[in-house]
Length: 305
Ligand code: ARG
Ligand code: MN
Ligand code: MN
Ligand code: MN
Image (tube, rainbow, N blue to C red; front, top):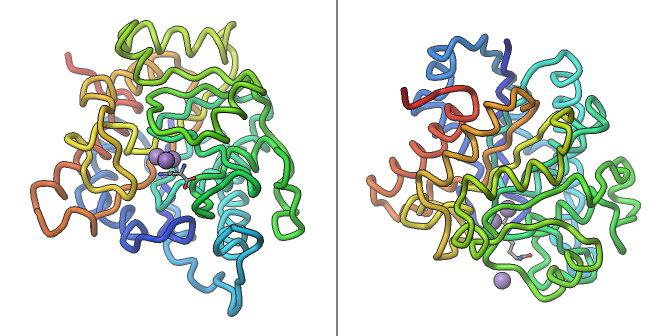
């Protein structure tokens, strides 16, 4: 079994600098060796480590969208790299970088596994369209583009065609969903387990219900897209858009452990680790980076016993 690790140094989907250094920081913490220690054959693909050459000289807003051409170019490139690894049957591990990169990761994995399902762990729904977004930050929009929602059919994103259907997407951990996003989730009937459902049913039942919804016969490959802000800020403080009331350390890891157990995991994203937002507090930094690594280890088979 081979895992290909793609570190993507990119922050163009939002305004805060530093998130481009997430991949390097996890690598320095020893992520690659940790996965070898779990008996994985580890391939490091360095092609996405520096994509600054893809930044256009001029990139004016499109409507509200910020840096649309840069985000698009990086995600198009990433999608091709991801596709290549996924088609070889490797587990594709992408370390961000901000969550706009999911257009690239899912753009790529869905070409290799057209029937895959997505488990999206996040405080946010990241399903704003160019028409509903308030911030204009594309890290709040990747799912709208992947689903091909209204307003996403832009010439600048012509490489990305709708590759996901609402029934194959499920959320865990939501607690900061914009009004327009709530309308979209309702309209499309997208299944979401917010922190309310985690409180009500417990994480064990929530993950089973999530799997039953997107993967009733347990035959679809699973792409886990994990925004570390799904975790409570006390667990993962160094991230750009923290929201209190999130997943505990154990709840966050249980999701990964259970998905490993299915044997269906084909890709994982770990997004929005921003070392610069530890505010010089080495403890906050180490804690966030360590939790990023341990989530991956759990998803790749580390067990407590
Ligand atoms: N909903 C807000 C927006 O669209 C916040 C999105 C945060 N996304 C993230 N990947 N952290 O701007
Ligand atoms: Mn988020
Ligand atoms: Mn908000
Ligand atoms: Mn996100």
